[in-house]
Image 1 (spheres, rainbow, N blue to C red):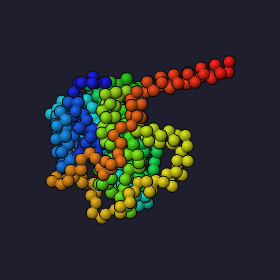
Image 2: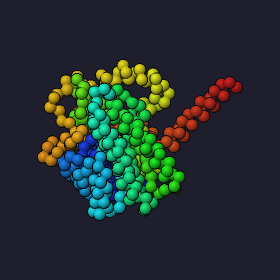
Image 3: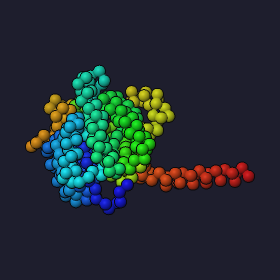
Length: 339
């Protein structure tokens, strides 16, 4: 665990837009040196400006995370130009919005390569450099959908479930070895990012996150906190994440029926899907000289910047103590009444 004011060398994959972009900026605000990995050159250059304006140092490394050789080469460049990697954050992802039977096998492979193998390759590149030093932190950015599948996102949900298994296996191995390297996971809610503008879709109407929606800066704050406190196995961000995971543990069959009834409409806006929408599945939507999508999507008017559950997730001890105090008080009151 690093000291709060200690600058570090941080790698962020998927840094050209959305959660990765907001996360890179948040690390920059700490004064960290941030290596920016993604495919889209326009977004990467804009992310460099974000980090440097925030007070950090930035290194742009165009990288396709589905290619291990590219990821390993990027890690070498980071250590050559910025120094030893302290934190590696895996964020890069993609998806296809469609029913399972409308997703082609090559699309499934691509989503899995980005969302799962991309995390495997990033984690391996980080561990190859961290383990010999017995120091470092890996943050896996997950989702409530790592626990609970929903309709129209089978490719994404499947990859996040796989990532959850990877995380748990690796964590137990590091604990067994009493390693100084930590791995933690941040489970996110629906976030207002450009993914809903650039992901491949076969829906009749434009895609949207399932409300309530949160701003990417909320996710970024959680990720930075996880990097500073990595001994926790995972963090849940947003009240809906906690509620979804809890409900799925208690009544998964009931949740199946609820999502079957509501999950199609809740993920679509009223506007019809246009035929000229950008598509980033096999090539970046923000190629050199093209539009920079930034960190935010189209939902600023309804996205929440804060949520009390984030504080609760970061302060389990205080929450447990408060809950214990309430239970003790209730127990004492009941006892007095009985007497």
